[in-house]
Image 1: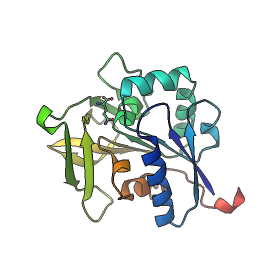
Image 2: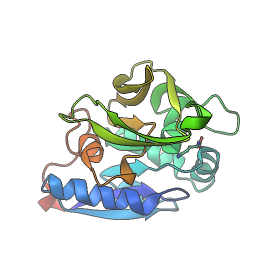
Image 3: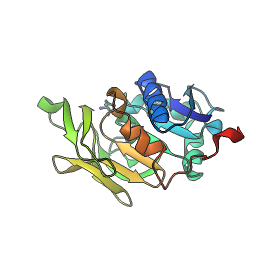
Length: 204
Ligand code: GLN
């Protein structure tokens, strides 16, 4: 059984846990999901999600709880991380906001709340590299990705990148945990050739 972790200091945690389990089932993998509110759990995780919510809060708490360094080690070991919306902002190398202490994992600069007021929340059918059919993407006060550095752009909306991959990390400006469609979780955790997910779950 694979061990998954959802950074659970703040944000839409249970939705990510459900989506990970659904994606696992779709790929024939059994997954146990832990909610991470303290240090000491991330080192046991094969895969990790950092949810949407409020990036200044998530940033503050992952540092004060000692989880930030563990997330860095997780990514350095090549294990997959899916960072969505506020999670993407925290994982980025530049949030363009002093109140966010970025983890610098994703070679990308982001602009918080980048999509205009009337479009604060919207759903859009998104063409995503690696997916055959458009993905129903839910944007809620979503960031745009300004500079993508070494990142591969997987999707754009309004000519701005909204999904990127940097090695074992996939970052999305939208919320793949809020729709029943678990293909983005599948892409991040079970189909990312740059990420190391143990193939032999029986060894645990
Ligand atoms: N606007 C939020 C932030 O900057 C992110 C919104 C979200 O995660 N839905 O933290």
